[in-house]
Length: 330
Image (cartoon, rainbow, N blue to C red; front, side, top):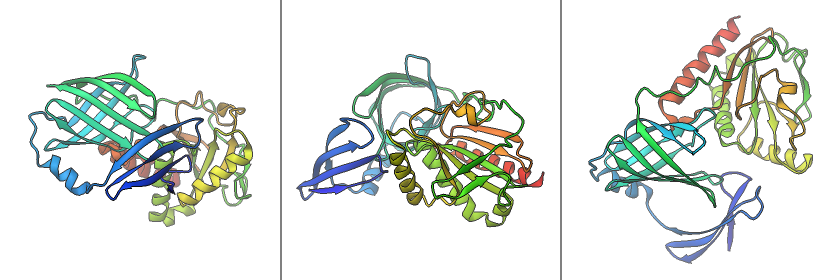
């Protein structure tokens, strides 16, 4: 039996060959108790599989925006899909993040979408009737809920930059040590007089991972601007011990090639985020706070819409670049 770890340090596959073209084994969430899912796998050519559905016509067209009711508690998401033939790709955004890459196909009047990143799994199976659909969402090894949607090209979620409010004008008091043992102090020469991007992070948070990948790529593409702006991640982990939290963070920092300070703030939910960051409430991980050269809070961005969201990610990139440029100029 071969043990293969994929996705992150929070999950692994235990797999063995059933035949030359089939696998069987288990998907295990290592950060959850008794989270084991039996699985089988068939060898396939993804390009040929996708091409099969892209060349297959469908009377239905799901391209565009959808207002999706995600549960009975009234949580809504914005579905943004692109259809080619009977293949459908896209994602679902919420006010706190997105469901990452979803991919699937229409068979007659039934749409099935799949999403899996090694740690989180989603299956959406819905019946489509003109400009609406109803069905089920399945997640992980047990969660399921009814969903419904209507096409709505004008539907928008609450603004990511308006949801979270600051409770103070500035963030002057900032003195920590990151997981590498380096001091992170706003009064030091390294940080004084520079703009700052403060990221509320969790190694368990997929949207945090996506945002970190964006940050590290942006930093490589904009080396000159790094003389004027500093990135700092403050981590809130869910572990039994501090040692375990540090171990997780060291691993994820290396895996993501995270080239900015990562500070462990809390590992057992004993620290209230709002006690160290002047926010009215933390509604999502990640939440990103932008500070100008005088450490004044000029913007707070709740959640993160990653590359799977198409135009929403593109708009975020434009806004991010404009924000950084304005922070540096001030």
